[in-house]
Structures are given as C-alpha cells and as structure tokens.
Image (tube, rainbow, N blue to C red; front, side):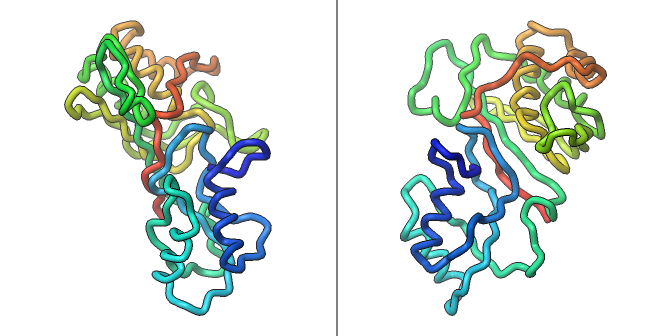
Length: 225
C-alpha cells in the first residue's frame, strides 16, 4: 500500500490521481502499511484538498483517474486533526486458503493453496489461543524501531467456505508480518505438523515464528474509529 521508491503502490497511484485534481500535498495519510502483495478492500486515506463540489463528485473524479485495479469506495469530510492511522481503534484482516492438490490459476492471486487440507477443528482451536492481549514479538516486528510488541486481539476465528478456509482477525493494531505468521503457524497446526498448543507456546516465546504465509492471501478489510 505505502509508496515505495522502485515499486508500484496504491499510495503512489492515489497521489497521482489526486494531483490531476489539484492536490499539492507531499504525502497522503493512510491507516496502515501492508506488505507488498497484500490486498486491501478497507484501507483508509486522508488528505487536504480544496474541492468545491460534493464528496460524491470527488469519488467519481478520483475513480475516473485511477487504474482498473484501484478504486475509491467512499469519500467523506473528516475533522481537521483526523489521522487514519493513529485514530484507528480496530483493524480487521482476512486471510483465505484453498485446499486442493493442484494449483488453481484463477484463485492463485487471492488465496494460498494448501495441501494436504488442514482440519477446521484444529484451526479453530489454534485461533482461540490468539485472543486477548499478548506480547506478539514472536509473530512480527513493531512499525517503529524500539516500539512495543504487545497487541490486543479482539477476535480470531476460522470458517469453512467450500474448499476454502477463511481466517479473520481483529486487533487494536498489528505488527509487520503478524497475521501472515499467525496463519502460517495455524495451518501447520491444522495439518497436524505442530502441536495443538503451538500458538500458545509461541506467545510465551521471543523466538520468531518461522512459518510465514504468502502475502497474496491476505487483505485488510476494515478499519474502525
């Protein structure tokens, strides 16, 4: 999501569209940074723009300038001191895996193919261990050097959807790679390749979880204020 010097990013694309509408800022504010390859259907951005028309007309004008793979879902006027990252109370991510022995090119860009299939009951048991406030240092790094790694997970669960399993997790904030390591370790538990209490053990350790799920199965779906 965040602007990168040598790689295409949603932030840079949105800033380019804004400049065509008269925006003269240096950088927009966003709710959260995501890894390269991670999707977002609920990202929030803020910027200052002199605009004499309605919010709906700004949405249409931006979407007319944006490429097909980026779209503005809604536009509204915010308080002058609003910050989409620091004012956020909760964020929700969703991760999709699909289970079949051969790859499916149509789904490959939005879900991680896992085989053999994990057991839903084991996935659900692992997810319960993530809930509550813990030090997640084994699952990721703080956004800023020296930042604390304690986070509160409000909800974490798996559900079946055909031959797919969907993991959804809500927390007050996330560390870099935190959800991807959560998923990687839980899938290993679900396949019977790790003990049922492996997640609980990781939360009591400072040793980094080695299992890292691919970025393309992950999406930021909502930010609450």
